Structures are given as C-alpha cells and as structure tokens.
Length: 138
Image (cartoon, rainbow, N blue to C red):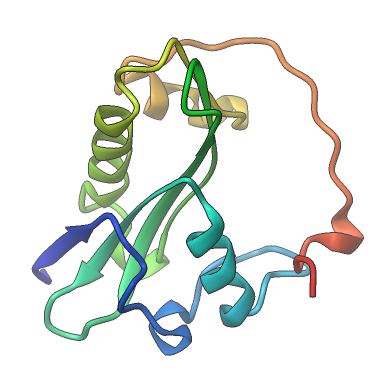
C-alpha cells in the first residue's frame, strides 16, 4: 500500500499527475481541463501517492464563502479505491467547510451510505446534465 499525502493546493500539480480520472464518462475532461477545474474551485483537497507523485484522488467545492458550498466532484483512481482515501478526502473537505450553514452534493442512491458515514443526510434535488459539454469549456 502506498503512502498518501493530502494537500489543499494545486500549485505544484501538473497535467501529467492527473491521468486516469473520470472513468466511465462518455466525454471526460482532458487532464488540462481537469487541472483548470481544480484551480478554479474555491476549495480542493488532493490525495497524492508520495512514492510516485501521482494524484490518486481529489475533491472539490465551490462556495459563496458566506452560507453555502457545493461539492461537485470526488474521485479516487480505481487502483486506489478501498483504502479509505475517499473517506479522508470527504472528512478533510467537510472540516474546511464546517463554518458554513449548508454543504450540499448530489449523488446516486447507492452512494448515500458513503456520505451518511461522514454525517450527511439524503435530500431531494433537481439537476440538469448537458453530456455534450461533459469534457468542459475550451
């Protein structure tokens, strides 16, 4: 098992470190777009394999900085899943957002128990997905 380091900045991250994410997405963002979305997020926590330097997981949040935040993305590379990395990313992000009134995210019902372990509750919501734009803006 690799030694994982957690960082809250993309300052030293390169596109090369971001290979392999968005598994199963029909139109995944390219690593350059992935790096841009990390850099444009209000909050980010990365899990980095200390041996290889590869980013193996990440979580992002966008926020008004006053009352609310939304967590749009959490991913851990398939080879690193089942090691508690996702749980640690969520724990660290929720700790960073603990002074806000509401922290929301959308997930499939089968993922609700995962987030419930972090203290979140199921809710009803609405969404719109433009899959033809899934790769991100140029």
